[in-house]
Image (tube, rainbow over the protein chains, first blue to last red):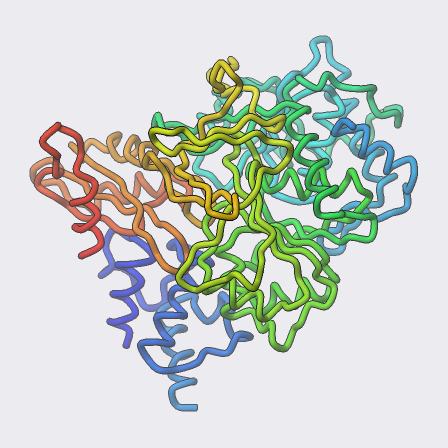
Length: 79
Length: 481
């Protein structure tokens, strides 16, 4: 899952010099993920993983890093 | 009525009305004019009157007080986006050639100018009269708003008191702003949407509520905030409204106080607008159109019955008393309006920007439909609109070409169905050079919304037989990757 998220974010939303150096805990918001990027990311996740992410959970905390994103998605896939 | 006299009348007539609210801080009209006068006195108690003052403050009450103080002192304000990289801020400051910069705290290290730095927190004890200045000449400059420039550097759009007050008055009247209105302000002050938030509101005795900035990342908290503060009027960009329509919890947060939503800055995709209209059935929506140079020159009251998913909405009818004409050959929209800029500010001088018959040539392609409404068909040049921000590819290219590793480059916009355009770059590198090497300088020199979201490295740029860059091929290459 993280590989797909990494590919989408680094190809479509945030450009960074060396994605391999970007850890799963590094801060995506600091790297340049903005509100419009978050909107596109959410649409991508909902299509790709067949989940519905509740409106009230769209918070910086849940999109801050790849680890946070994965945990958020998994919570809804299992739920 | 002039920009300042309408505000002044509200201060005298309804001094206890709330003017500004930001978090826990609020000011009524009486307190606002007192604080603005106090700061204004600091600007006028000098041997040589200040003519241009840079505002280096975040969007909010302090910056708004500073703007009023500058205008009250008969000077012109230049609002900065203080999150911009230092090199861009220094470029703008040097170009504007201000006598003074109003900021908060100590003079920052990055500042290269010798202009006076005024800490807004250190001005509170200056003695001043509370009389607001007499009339300012309508043609005097009131603001210089810097936007992205097609020559590769930021460009200052110089606006007179006449231009600002013509727009503010039109909007106040057309959207029936009253002292009961509670207006949400989200646009940064270097963005022309803020002219409505500040001046249309204050001229009517309404209250301005500054939206906490973090809320744009969480649409349901933004709608909860709009609901809690009983916001009645909101002027913002379509991409944010799309996010609200998609994930703003509007079905459980109905926003009963919201009457009017104005949007501008980019095309609102009709499917998202339709969705938003369905979620907010009692709200009047307006599509406002116009570059910073003319402010709003065309507007369309959204007719819900005519929203068809596959058809873009019109930009509508002339606004603010503008006279519009369409160039027969290119289909370019040309605008004659009291809103029009006085000129471009360049290296301390005003450069003419209008044709001899006072029209501004927008570079936008338009047509008239069968109902007599203007319809927008994109740019005649390469300008992009990214989340409502105007972005000139040439400005990004100029920064790319400053990198010693880059021998050639071209920037285009990739269009996205939900969030407008985003810049993408094709670069040609020196032998042995790596793309990684240019990313850091780019991130340091360009504001976030101007940073390309995608890069490709090419051996050479594609050219047409006439020697011009082949943007169509570039589009295919960048969208394929």
